[in-house]
Image: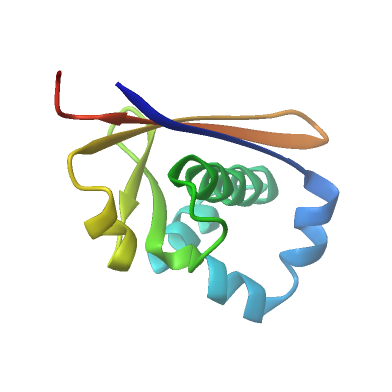
Length: 121
């Protein structure tokens, strides 16, 4: 059963400006996410899709923006993105699957999150 859906679109130019603000970057992204960005020749689209994914997950959960570090966007061995919830969000999302999809163009990044119950009716 679907419990929530969220989407976010963000301009890469806006992310490029904010990426220069170390306090913002350190507040929003986990150490694992920052390490992932450093592996990229052009990290801006990856920063943008990760930020958009966090926003989409918050929307899908219906909580509004909270602590950005309570949501970690990571990749599996096939480079597919997935969500790890931490802190208060981890407890609130027990028995739920969170699916995400990320994409970007030269100018925008987009992410969608879908939350479904693990419990079958």
